[in-house]
Image (cartoon, rainbow, N blue to C red):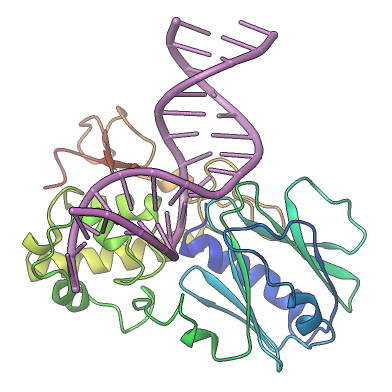
Length: 271
DNA sequence: AGTGCGGCCTGTCCGC
DNA sequence: TGCGGACAGGCCGCAC
């Protein structure tokens, strides 16, 4: 479900409720997520004060002196801050009670999400250490995309969705950024010129930034930590707009499959 | 090393 | 009305 704008919106939503709070209880209702929730999580985290609520790519990092809780929302995960006695919904797998009477709940019907615990630098964790740059940081640029795409035959759309190239670009924003940049999603990554990568990097940045300002994209079930949807859906140019007219040239938007994922593009605007 | 695919899960929708 | 199949904001791990 969530891409970078949704994860960052979630982070901003939960941070004020958690920062400086002490974890009073951890309840695991369903330990079978993408990986099994570590059995020692409750013992390690209970009694700890939350010092940081950070994000790296689509991973949320809840830091304490003893270690860091690493959360990933997968395809269908969401986090909510609720009253400690709020009724449990189906698929509320984890809850973290804090000392202000509230609790953080991980809800994830498909269970592709993750909850990990590390006592070391979370950025050195095996799942995080090889991630590419943050698209909203100065380390991300057209030059970076250009350099890493040389001799790559992979199509540009899955290329920019590879978190080892750049983090945070999922299936919606990959299509949207390629539309903004005027690049056909099927084009081989290694056959795109430097100048076009400058444009693509700018398109990725602006797309994610615009989506963040709108609180993310709600297509089906995404809600932020207050239960509110995101409004970037209204600004989507191609995603889930198959056969509808391009907002620029009126040509019908096309849909295709690239490695089991739907891609959308305008055959007139994108080459 | 890079590429592509299966698999992990549940819910919903669509065609028969 | 069931039932099967396709599909859904991700990404790891495994073959080639």
